[in-house]
Length: 167
Image 1 (cartoon, rainbow, N blue to C red):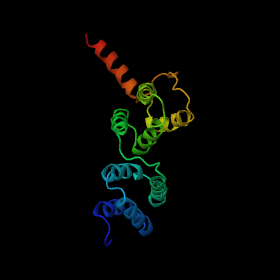
Image 2 (image 1 turned 45 degrees about the vertical axis):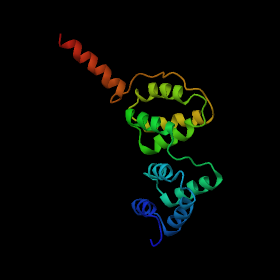
Image 3 (image 1 turned 60 degrees about the horizontal axis):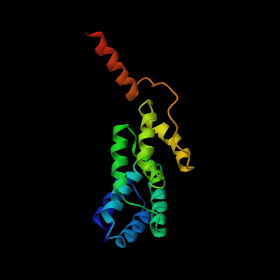
Image 4 (image 1 turned 90 degrees about the horizontal axis):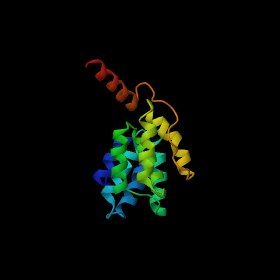
């Protein structure tokens, strides 16, 4: 990888990017000094778990050229904390960040989404299902189902009943 920025080479090697994608990334990042670190951080997270990282990267580079790509922003930090709290995988967290960025009340949406996720034992799958409605601009409804076994809410309820039995 002669002449390629070390940060780009490291990302390329880790994600197994092909030569074309690596060179294209290096060319694009040379034009993005002001947002370099935030962009690279967003790419590390965004490419994690991708079935075709080179193809996905080419899409992200097109977004950069069109001005649609965002690096890690203040909202993203909140989304990352939220993702940790509700055990979301990287892909669900990134998609949530992208969708919330276009919503009117991202903070309020996260509170409502959290009510759903804490009842789920598969929060990332549920998040992907909720994203469709969010993308279409629909409001987040109140959860209608009881807490699933293995969910955060279920673990909390178990804790309450265990504590009562010890008095």
